[in-house]
Image 1 (cartoon, helix red, strand yellow):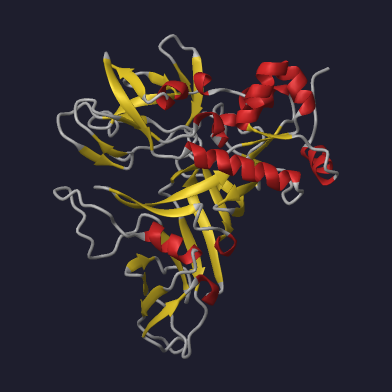
Image 2: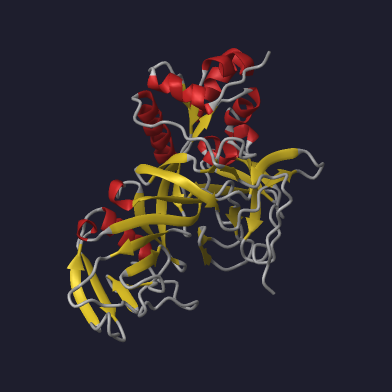
Amino acid sequence: MGVERTIKEINERIKSGKAVVLTAEEVIEKVKEKGIEATAREVDVVTTGTFGPMCSSGVFLNFGHSSPRIKMQKVWLNNVPAYTGVAAVDAYIGATELPEDDPLNSDYPGEFRYGGGHVIEDLVARRPIRLKATAYGTDCYPRKEIETTITLDDINEAILFNPRNCYQNYNCAVNLSDRTIYTYMGTLKPNLGNANYSTSGQLSPLLKDPFFKTIGVGTRIFLGGGIGYVAWNGTQHFPSILKDENGNELCAAGGTLAVIGDLKKMSPKWLVGTSFRGYGATLTVGIGIPIPILNEEILYYAAKTDDELFAPIVDYSDAYPNRKPGNLGYVSYARLKSGKINVLGKDVPTAPLSSYPKAREIAYILKEWIIKRDFLLSEPVEALPNPHSGIKGKVLN
């Protein structure tokens, strides 16, 4: 008989201090030593981690009422606009928002840019934030403007809600053109001058549960240094399985998560404002997800190595806008992490946009939380679409 256990049973073992918890790196070594069946009998939970730029991030803020009251029509936080079409003193600050006077344009690649992601980092670090708001005035909300300084502790609620995080498997980005291009995958040098990637490979959460057998709506996670939850599938959640030219399955791709948590319980170590030259601002987010080992199949995928996980190589100077993933083939994360790959017969240096050491640290922190009984697993209340669901994305013409 194969191993079959439930999340409830695993939680009971966590509460009693008997649960065996390994990081995704550790379980790989355990499987090499003992095999899938024996390891599945022994291990209850595998922890994962990722720490990289995640543009589709932001925070819902409730500032509390002024005297007299104001119905905020426009809001700026450290001169960065926030969206106010929510309620009187609510706003949403997006990670990629830039100040209205930012000189970003295609002719000037620019340098560091302060944007929404930096506002979020400043908030969670308890740094002072300059709040400015204007309004048209109503009988119940007569005030027309306010300008003051706030910190995270001065406001009622700050809810980190990221519509698309934890991308399952990002491209390896290259540039075949004869000019330097500036992208959300960083600066890409001409004529295959470099190759950038942004997935943690064998530690990456959604590569360790590629069919969403354990990750679903309601899954409790490490988010930004605190505890968060999977709220829904992320936007652009189009899960699929990459296949080579012979039709052999290589790796999962396309899955994303919408996540939510209390910003006041998070840390600036794991929410970092980030700026990409020629692109703008974003937020680097730390996420860790526990994978309950319910059976041998789940362990099989949780123990996949960098040699068994692949990213599509994509030319961002032409093919990316035309939606041709993998037009230059696929490359293993082991090769990407070696510092050099071969593309069209040329050796190309590689560099990660995400931090593997930080991903490892997140996996260890989550492991310690579980071992210390500070973190229990949650049963998903609804499954997420998986690669067999046949979901396809729409493209604007």
